[in-house]
Image 1 (cartoon, rainbow, N blue to C red):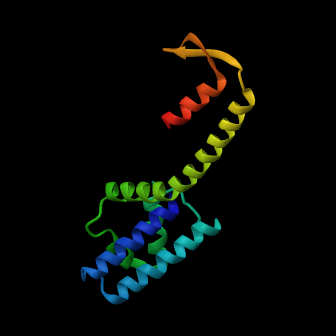
Image 2: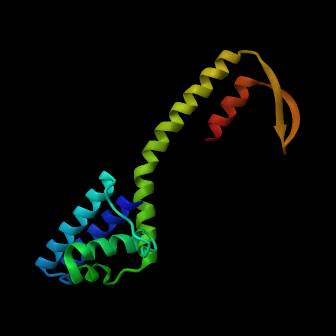
Image 3: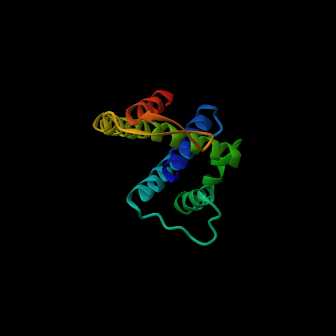
Length: 147
């Protein structure tokens, strides 16, 4: 979630600037530095060091290397918990369409297999125990409807 951490930091810097907490020059410096960090992550060029506790400290360390003490202003009014929640939400927003697409492909494959099975009988299960015999197609259709 490195890219999402940087994206969240960019949005936070914009909010701090809008609230007049960051001066124009500070905002420009932080934004440029974060853009560089994001490009380093995207290209695989970002270098972690042993003192980086997590992604947040790694980004903060690198931003400080790039722009100096102004980087410290980025954390005004924001906690690590805020960052974690924001990073995860941004990651989920990006992952959900990909998962949705993958599930649709899986559903199509399951339906195709069920149709090929035709009248094939198999055991149904309840509470992890075999139950009444069912058609393979019925089992697949039921699981897809439940999704």
